[in-house]
Each structure stands twice: as C-alpha cells, then as structure tokens.
Image 1 (tube, rainbow, N blue to C red):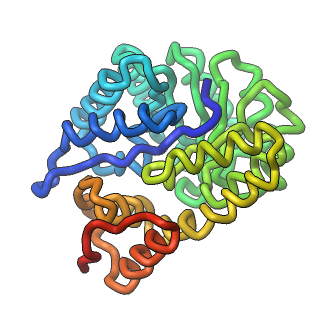
Image 2: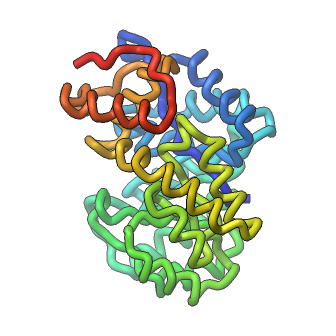
Length: 298
C-alpha cells in the first residue's frame, strides 16, 4: 500500500462553484480504468483550503463509495491543529478511507520535536495508516530526515510524500529509514530521479491527465528497463513543468478542461490563468500528443 501512482485528485465544480458530484465520480472511474494505484482527494491540488468541512467529508464519502475497494483512497486530513487533524482522520476512517495524508503543520512552524509529537499523536489516535507530507515551500517548515527516521518506527506511519525538492535530503531519509517507510515523490518533475535513489512512487498532479504514462514510467523502472523509463520520463518532463506555469492546481484544471474533461474553474482566491500562460499550456498539451478539444479562453 501507498506506493506506485497516487493521484492528487482535483475537485470538479459546477459553473456556480458548487461541488460537481457526478464529475467527481467520473474521475474516480477514470483512474480505476487507468490502473492508478491510489487517489488523494482533499489535498492542495484538490483546493481543500477553500472547502467547508461539510464539503470535505462529502468528497471523501463520494470517492470511497465510487472506489468501492477497487482503488486505494488516502484523503488529505492534516491541519495545523493536532486535535482537528485527529478528528479529520477519525472521520475519514469512519467513511472507509484506506489511510490519510497529513501535512506538516503550517503557519505555526513547530520545531522538529513538535513535529514528532504531532505526528505520533495522529498515528496513535487516528487508527489508520498515515502518509506524512513534507512541503516546506507551502508550510514554512521542513521536516528533517532524523525526525522522519524517528517517526518511521511507528507501525501506522507507512509513507512520506516528500516535496522539499532536495534529493540529498531524500537520500538521507532512505539511508536512515530503510524499508520502514515508503518514500513518494511530491514533485512530478523529479519522480524518476527519486525512483533511482529508492523512492517507490509519486503523489502526482500530472497523473490527473496522463495516469497511464506515469504508471508506464514507474513500471519500466521497476522492471529494470532504464532506457525506457528515461525515455518516458523525458517525454513527461515538459508536461510536468507546464502543470506549474502558475500556482497549482490552476494549470492542471485548465488542462483538463482543454482536454474536454470538464472539471470547472478554480475557487477564489485562485483565478483563471493569464492568457499568455494558458496559451503556453495549450501548446504543451499539443506537443505532448494530447488532443486539445476546447479553445484556450482567457
């Protein structure tokens, strides 16, 4: 569990900004058909900061229901409150989630000892497997390898989504933890290098649109077909870059709409992409070989 391709699932909205439940179910089926290993709803790519709590748990309920055990569901449940995070994990467990992703507490900037105590409490009280999420660029705090090593001894802490961007840090994590924790890339653009140091997969943004290609790259690497893995990785790289022309998830939702997937707009405070960047995105999709079905609109 918690290896291979886990997709940070976008949240589809109607034109009035309300949750598009049928489209969400359609996206789950799309990933089941593609062979995606797991889904991570209610994450940053899902626009979880803009949800009501009612929406948050409804999304988990829908994804679990539609998954019906055919694909793993590991929703984002972390906040900068230990008590609230436990409540979220407990509710996700009750709704049938297979695990929970929990981000390092943001804004309040805990020390390494605070991070350790926070995650240990979540693991002790949450009752389901946890994927830790280290993303210092968004949270303002970096979880050090020594802290991960201490946490990896807990039986419910099974994976780490690492988005520090530092291969040196990730290598140290693998050296310290061994097989006690599954290291997953938190950045699509460096998934292949992370596999090369012992990573076991990715929590992907680009997987929202080309899951089969990401799966093929991982499979080729795991089977020792390194030239094939590199070829696939180099093909994916410009598309991965295009997903971050502007703040995630603005580009991936625009891309999905251009490809006819109809997921709607982002919610404020995110906005539509600048026209020039939208044009770059459209060209990146076409260059990749994807058929753009809608015109780029500013």
